[in-house]
Each structure stands twice: as structure tokens, then as C-alpha cells.
Length: 137
Image 1: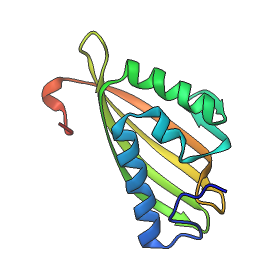
Image 2: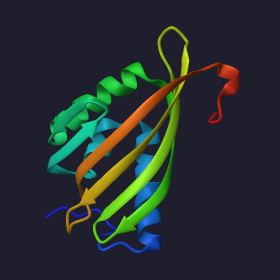
Image 3: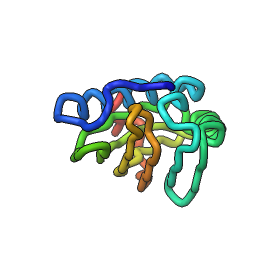
Image 4: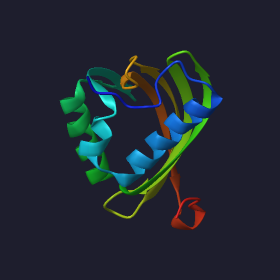
């Protein structure tokens, strides 16, 4: 059976490690790599979209990073308990016309005993910014 340490139950150190691992993976923008951190039957809500299973995650991420160019993400641990972690995040990207955005949000994660993410619920808001306002370069 696949595992993705650190495994729950989380403590402060392992929760921070899990968040950093997620940030690093998403910043690599590799859907094949990222989707392997999720259970085969993972359930997501991303904005108003509902995504079920690794294959749908992979397809979603391919589309996301084709649209959100020069994507750069920063995550911060907000809270944790047992097999759950909450994060706040922000990321910057631009569209194919050169318009920059900063996207803010919160995610709630639930993990399997093997350390794979079973559920991911993300609420995200976008803010138009000028390139000169970027924080992540």
C-alpha cells in the first residue's frame, strides 16, 4: 500500500512538514507528481468545482497550470488535529494576456492513515494586481 510520510496523527513539526511538501510540489507544477499525494478516490472542492479521484485531479492541474502562467505559491499552516490540516495560502500568476493576479484562500485537508490526502476543500479569491505589485518572483 502506498504511503506518503509524514503520517497522521500530526504534531506541529509533521504538520509544517506536510504543508511545505505540498507547497514545493505545487510550485514544481508537475500534475503527475502532485496527484500522487492524493488517494485514488480523493474528493476536492476547488472554488465552485468538484473533483473526484486522482485522474480528475491530474486533468484539473494540467488545465490550471496551462492557464495560470508563472504560478508561484506560498502556503502557511493555520491549524492541525489528528489527520486534518488547515492552511492559508496565496499565489501569483498571469494569464496569456499578461494580466497578473494574486489568489488568496484557505484549504482544509483530511488524510488517510497512509498520509495521502483524502479530501481537499479550497476557497479562493482572485485580486487583479500590477506586475510591479508582485511579492513572489
